[in-house]
Image 1 (cartoon, helix red, strand yellow):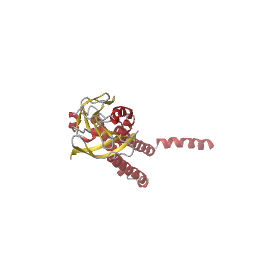
Image 2 (tube, one colour):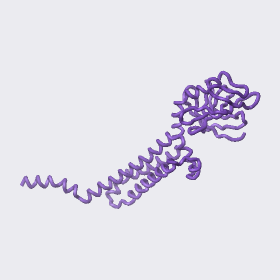
Image 3 (tube, one colour):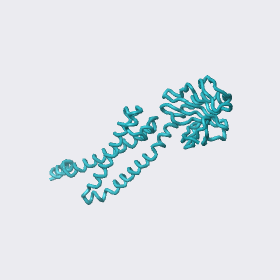
Image 4 (spheres, helix red, strand yellow):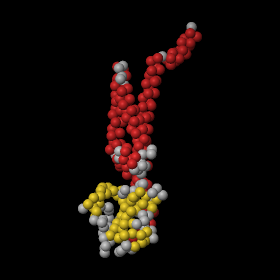
Amino acid sequence: MSTCVNTAGMSEPSDARSNPTTKRRHQRRAGWSWLWLAQAISLLGLAIWAALDPLFSKVSRLSAWQTWQVGLNHWRVPLLVLIAALAIGSLLLLLVRFLARSNQRMRSRSLAQLLAITTLAAAWCGMLIHLDSIAWQGKRIRFVARVDQLEAIAAPLRTDWPQQDGEVSQVGPFMAYPFGRPKTLVLLQAPRVTERAVYVSSIERGDDGSIKLQLTGTDGGDWAEWHPEGSRPKSFVDGLFELHRLDFATPIGRGWYLVRYQSGPR
C-alpha cells in the first residue's frame, strides 16, 4: 500500500509537467519575458547611443534623405529604424497579449501587468522628450576630458588679446573684427581640440574678459567658454554683429562652460 502511495506521489510532478495547461502557462511567461527584454534593450540602447554618439542629435532631427545627403546614415539611420521597430513592435504585442486575456483568474492577476505597461509607455514618453538632454549630458562628459586642450588655446589670449590681424602659436593665422577694437578672431586655420575632429572656427572675447571658442566638426556646433570668477555665459553680439541668444550652459570645470546659443541677426 505504501509503495503505491509513494509511486503516486512521485508521479504527480511528472503529471504536472506534462499537463498541457502548465505548458501553456510556461510558454505565456516566456513570451512576456522576451517582450519585456526587447523593451529594455531598445530603451537602454537608445539612451546609451544618444549619450555616446556625437552625431545622434543630427540624425534624430533630419529626415532619412537629408542624412543620406550629408553622409550620416551609413549605419545610424538603419539602427534608429531597428530600435524603433523593436520598441513599437514589442509594445504592441504586450498590449495585444494583455487585451487577449479571457480567463477570469488571469484577468484578476493582470492589474500589475497593466500598471507595468503604463509605466513603460511613460518611460518612453520621458525618453523621447529628454533625448536632447541625454545627448547634451554625454557631450558635457566628453568635454570635461578636453578642458586641457581648450585651456591651451585660450591661455595666451587671456593675457594678450590681439588688436589686429595676425597669428598666435596655439591658434594660427586669424582675421580680427571689428577693425580698431576687435573682439572676434576668425581663424584661417582652425586648431583641432581633439582627435575626434573637433575644431575651433572663431574666438570671441567678452567685455568681462571671458574667452569664447566656437566649436565645429563632428562634436561641434556649440561653444566652449572660459569665464573669470563672477562671470557666467549670457547672450551677446559678436564682432560680426550677429546675435547669439543663450539657450543653456553647463560647467565643465576650471571656469569652463559648454554653451549652446540660438544664433541670428540682431
